[in-house]
Figure 1 (tube, rainbow, N blue to C red):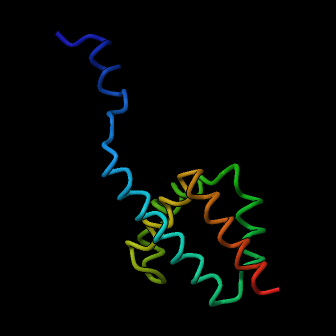
Figure 2: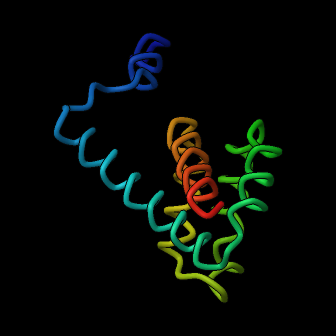
Length: 110
């Protein structure tokens, strides 16, 4: 018989080993660097920082919208790039690191 405690156990996050966590953080840092360099190559650092700062409270919703719009965005970007950007938007720590990286590149250019 399945009880509510089994459901709660199912929903409880499982521990992640440090190696897997480090690999995930390295992947997110790589994505952040790729996004920051693409924005810098187009010289859109200031508008990107403004847009991201204004939409910080709804970053998670923006990531979910990117997942939803992935078929439409695939005309412009590869699906794995859309998914990677959505993962960064969903994670507040990665979102803050992206903003910090863009802020650094803005300071370097002035």
